[in-house]
Amino acid sequence: YQYLRRYKNKEDLDHFLFTPKTTEGTEKEWLEILLEFCCCRNPSWTELSNFTHFLNFQLSKCEKSVFCSPAVGDDFQGF
Image 1 (cartoon, rainbow, N blue to C red):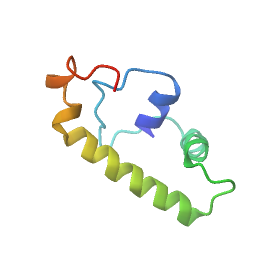
Image 2 (cartoon, rainbow, N blue to C red):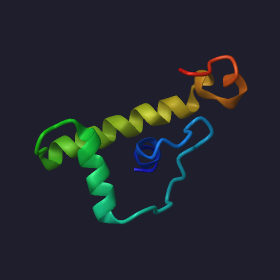
Image 3 (cartoon, one colour):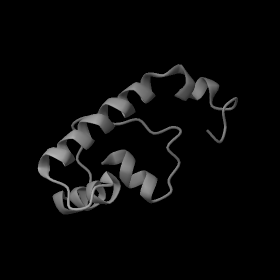
């Protein structure tokens, strides 16, 4: 939710890191954002669960990638 909300609001994600156990927004806002980005029309709970697991996995890998670190941010602007 933290990434998707910031992405939707066109916030800079280059220096944002997910903060576990931090609550932002309401359950309703979370579900609205999730449904907007899930790309399934009328998704089931299983599809939403699979989407969130996939998204969490990808974003975790991205945060740990040297290519997404602030150290190389100037070299890879716009990516």
